[in-house]
Amino acid sequence: MTPKIVAPAQPSDTVTAIEEAARDLLAEGGLEALSMRGVAARVGVSATAIYNYFENKQALVKRVVSQGFERFTGYLRGAIVDLPVGSAERLKALGEAYIRFALENREYFRVIFASHAETPQDIEELPEGGGYELFRQTVVDAMEAGTIREADPDLVVLYLWTHVHGLVTLLLTCEPDARCEHTGKRLSAPELFTRFSEFVLYGLRPEGVSRAETGSVAAS
Amino acid sequence: MTPKIVAPAQPSDTVTAIEEAARDLLAEGGLEALSMRGVAARVGVSATAIYNYFENKQALVKRVVSQGFERFTGYLRGAIVDLPVGSAERLKALGEAYIRFALENREYFRVIFASHAETPQDIEELPEGGGYELFRQTVVDAMEAGTIREADPDLVVLYLWTHVHGLVTLLLTCEPDARCEHTGKRLSAPELFTRFSEFVLYGLRPEGVSRAETGSVAAS
DNA sequence: CGGCCAGGTTAACGCTGTTAATATAACACT
DNA sequence: AGTGTTATATTAACAGCGTTAACCTGGCCG
Image 1: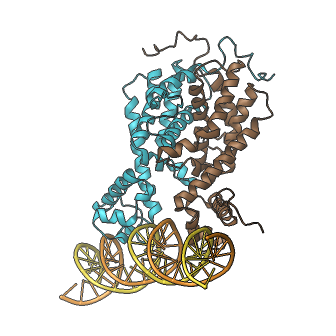
Image 2: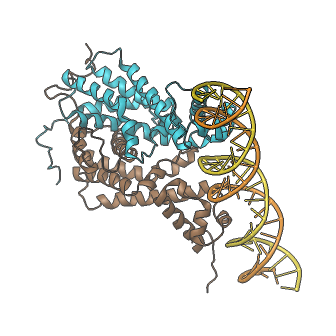
Image 3: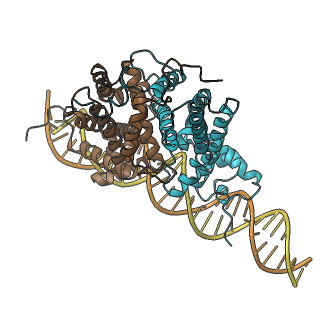
């Protein structure tokens, strides 16, 4: 029985149990299913016991979200690690993994990106940490390999991020399996992503028109 | 027999007052600021009086969201009505209006697209109604005018929708004024949208490569 | 031993959505 | 006029929520 030397270094059993219970409740029924009393009941303690480890519910949620974000980036990293650096496959796999994780962890993802990020500190520590860097590096590699054209990497990252994130949030608020096509085609999310990839690569400009022509004179 | 829960043909004074109070509270402090007692207090009645007009809070929120969606589509329609049909300006103005409305009505927009859409009926009546058709018609016009290349309109609509929606949701969860550029550039949302428009038109493929070459053989 | 303190308890406050029972006023019908 | 019905509002209450306060309890340290 070695007495625990430093408390904060390795978390106690109780606190991890609390985190697990909170994570499960969150994944099962969303934010409103995560109640202090509910978490406490799962752990087998009183509700107020949680306040020994977390200042309030928001802090608990923040912790869970933070861990979820780490799992998210880990998932993304694992999805592209075996693919050749700078390849289009790698870039595409990253987007697909983004979508897959979001759809398979709906409530989780929802809460991760519903963290209103009131304090500017929140946004610093959460989404930018590993996720953005991973995204950016993949884009930079693809640029150097000639897979995509050269441009401001941050701009391109944000552009691609916007796309996958938009697709995901639309699918999350509409329907699980992408019935957003209203002509009865009902493409699945991966199918949609594949179709979109072509637009991303080649753009929407009409076929025979060179870049100079459509510049900004499209109006009559 | 059954007390009429649905608002009558001409809404009474009280019900519109309730809707207004609910809308204001929602716009001010988000969903959690919208409480039955709070709404009732603003109207000047008892909390339970609301239940004469709305089955429960969810129904009230749904009503407010529905009205907000109508305002949203009206806003979009007004933003493009004066611009030439089929022009790139029109398409761009639509996207810009989408972003502008979302950023100027943050809580509103958030709740509109946070309507988990549990019942399939919800999604039918809400987002598809006028908004999608407006979006689609604008795209079809642009296609016929040769502003953008020809493709499945629904696919292109969803593509562009994904684009603006993703940008908006990212900006909403990150920061008001788009500090998502982490190199200190801090482009504003309209600036970002303008920059992205070029990507949307011309794509990300490297400059000199024709469509056939990069098809799907980008791997090593 | 005394003291401290982390970790747990119960009780309680004020808030929430919601239900039940009740009151009141206006209208229709005989 | 009386009577019933309906719409509209009320108050009281319940269960659940996050959170605070006061209290207990066991183990560690000087």
